[in-house]
Structure formats: C-alpha cells, structure tokens
Amino acid sequence: MKRRVVVTGLGAITPIGNSVDEFWSNIKKGCVGIDNITRFDTSEYKVKLAAEVKNFQAKDYMDFKSAKRMAKFSQYAVAAAKEAVEDAGLCMEKEDPFRCGVIIGSGIGSLETVESEYTKIQEKGPGRVNPLMVPMMISNMAAGNVAIQFGMKGKCTNVVTACATGTHCIGDAFRAIQYGDGDVMLAGGTESAICPSAVAGFMNLTALTTTEDPLRASIPFDKDRSGFVIGEGAGIVVLEELEHAKRRGAKIYAEVCGYGATCDAYHITSPAEDGSGAAKAMELAMEEAGVVPEEVDYINAHGTSTHHNDLFETKAIKTALKEAAKEVSINSTKSMIGHLLGAAGGVEMITCVKALEEGYVHRTMGSRESDEGCDLNYTFGSPLHRKIRCAMSNSLGFGGHNATLLIKEYIE
Image (cartoon, rainbow, N blue to C red; front, side):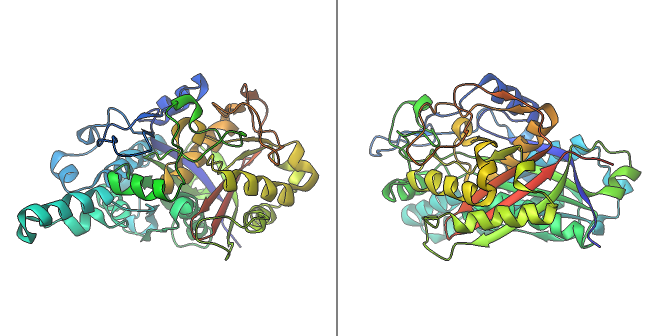
C-alpha cells in the first residue's frame, strides 16, 4: 500500500519576494520581477533583461562562515528550506534524523563559480583558485548544504533534469515517502545562473527574448512571444507522510496525489511537436490520483514564452484533458518571475498550493492576445477567483524531460 503524502511547509526565494508571503502578495498585486541585468555589463549582449533576486542577504538565514562556503544557488536553497521548515513547525530534535531527507536539485549548479575561478587561472595562475571551487560549483551541494544545516540524515539526492529539475525532485520525494524511504522530505529546486556564460549560451541558442520592455518580455502563449527571460531563486516544500503529520499536529496545505514523468526522446531542446510526452506525464499523474480530466480545475503551465514550448504544451494539455481542456484554468507564473530553470518547478508547486488554499488563479501578466494554436484559457487580462480542488503543475526540460505533479485539497 502506498502511503499518503501531504504538504506541510513552504519556502521561497524569488525575483518578487524572499518569502512565500511576500512572493504571494506580489503575485496577487501583479508585480513583475523582470528588469535590466545588474550582475554584469550587457553592452555587447543582445539580451538585456533578467529576473534577479533582490535584497538577498545570506547572513539573514545562516551564519557568515557557512554562507562563505556556499555558492548563491546553495544559499538560496538553505534560505528557502529554513522558511519551509519553520512554516511546517518541524522540530528536528523530536525527529529520527534518518527518516528525514532532502531531494533538492539545480539544473546548472554554479556557473558563476566556474567563471570567477577560471578567470583567476587565466590572470593569476592555478595556485590562486579557491580550494572550495568544486564543492561550491557542483549541483548536488544545495541538497548537501540543506541536509547539513538541518541535520537531516536520511535519503539525500539531487535530480538534474534541466528545467524539470524542481518538479522531478518533488516527485521523487513524494515517491520516497510513499514507499517508506522516509517520513519527512525537503524537496524542490534552486538556481542562480544569471551570469555571462549562461546568458550568452541561451542567447546564441535564440532561446532568450531580446525585447527591452520588462512588461512585454515574458508573455507566455501570446502571439508576440519571442523567448524566455532567465530568472533565479529557490522553491522548497516540506512533504510528509500523512499519519506523521497528523501525530504532530501539522498544518496540512494539500495532498500530493499524482506524479508523472516521461521523456520525449525527440530533440535536445524542442519538446515533441505533438506534445505526446508531456501529455503522457499529465495522464500518468491523473491516473495515479484517480482523477478524470473534468476534475482538474487548474494547471500551472510550464509556459516559458518560447514559440515551441507554448504551442506544444497547449497540444499536450488538449491531448491529456480532451474536451475538458477548454474548461480548465491555466496560467504561467513565469510571466512574473521569468524562468527559474531548475528552481521553476519548486516555486510553481508553491503557487499551486497557494492557489488551492485561496481559490485564486493569478493572471498571466503581460500576455494580451493568444497565438494561433494557443486557444485555451490562459488567464489573460485579470485573475480568477474560483474553487480549486485539484491542480497540476507541468515542467518540461531540455533533453525531453517531462514532469507533472498533481495536488488535491486534503480531505480526511
């Protein structure tokens, strides 16, 4: 028998807020966290915009010595995890640490560290490279640092599936609890890659928008969309076995009921043109949850604002939900915070939880007129207030990785 899994804690570092409350408040205000890149000189770059985290001070979340040993993506993960643990009211002194684990991923790790240390080699020689270069840059160190910070000695892994990373991490944590590998898991994604090499790489791939209007830069499903906006941050949730959560009197936000993971096996950057891989992920999540398409109230789409993603994801939703696709409410949080790469799925899962909790589907900001072929309800113009009992979050990553999580209103 699979064990039931619930969400009991939320934590976020985002371009529009460094806590869940601030993030969600700004979501409802329609704030857009996209602006000119400040991290480096973009005079030779066609791309000028990004969604940077603002006013983040690592010392507010951890001691100075620990922060100095972490790259920014790990700092974001620890900060978001701290909020999630506190939100869940989790006291590790009362827990078996070997039943508490961490599955937090980063799509890239720290390119900033690679850049800065390689510059030292070029300018000053290899003897000047930081001895902690490797443990600062490798992507598993977000999970490792979070486990160290909170004394979690159970399963600790790092799924890396590009832009599907955060969703796959939560899905794997869901599975770990379902099948008894742990009782409590911190799960999600983190990323900080707004740096010259990442921007140049995505730019030359023609994946990033070159518009200089922040309010019309990330416009998913819009006929004028021209690429995604690179963002950064972290989204972490506390997943917990239901009976464990009930015994300690935890607040239960929602129940995780389904998880689907597939591969397009088609192209390294483009989703399958018929959307079949993403559709199957949604179908698997619904099948596991015992949900029919008509019961899905809301989908937080991957919705990157690239031509191929938005068109093919629309096809996927139509394939998976059939006639019910016309009725489901869809939006893209990336319209406000850009694309957080490996962290996207974590923050978007939090958005689904809050949408379910408050009956609120935020507007897809900046998007005005749907493209031909994008003919579903993407919540343009104004937000929706509606009862949400069942929500899905989609993530699609380079390499053909597809992941869908399905959550439901918790009912005893």
